[in-house]
Length: 108
Image 1: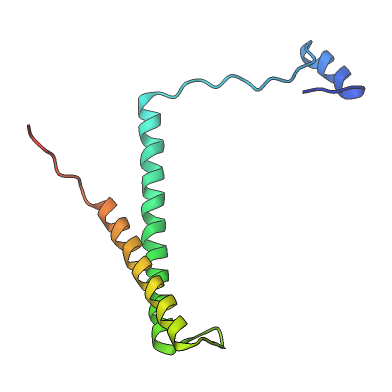
Image 2 (image 1 turned 90 degrees about the vertical axis):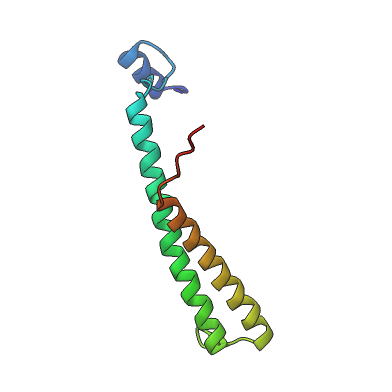
């Protein structure tokens, strides 16, 4: 929106209106919507697999070494943190792989 002064004058000269309205968006076709949804699914799947592997590796390292970045962690916290990270990483890895599998068709 134009306020006062030179900005308002430029708005009036450029478009004849004092309001700057955004251009109207054209509706997407069905194919464009489908492609956009597919690209989002592939991005999420890639992130799930990558972060799942990362969390599983970091969790297993914490379980094995019981230290993280040269900071000694008490053993009980190391087991809890490492276990939660490893389980969370494996779950994300499972979710990413499951999204790649084709869905079964149910015939009724």
